[in-house]
Image 1 (cartoon, rainbow, N blue to C red):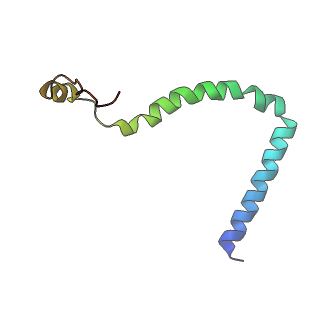
Image 2: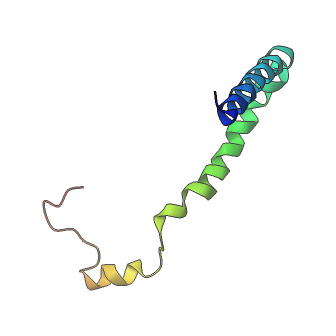
Length: 77
């Protein structure tokens, strides 16, 4: 067994034991925080997941040049 894999195994075991005791001894605190964590996840996902949209500037110029953004018949929704 390599040293790196042994360290990962010990760390995984320690984290599993810590998670077990956290959930068994502090279940009311952990489960009481879940609604707040869900509410916090909404703005965080909005901030961090909108990065892949690219630049929104100049899109209106392209629509005006191509006919005002109207789709030809049969082009889908």
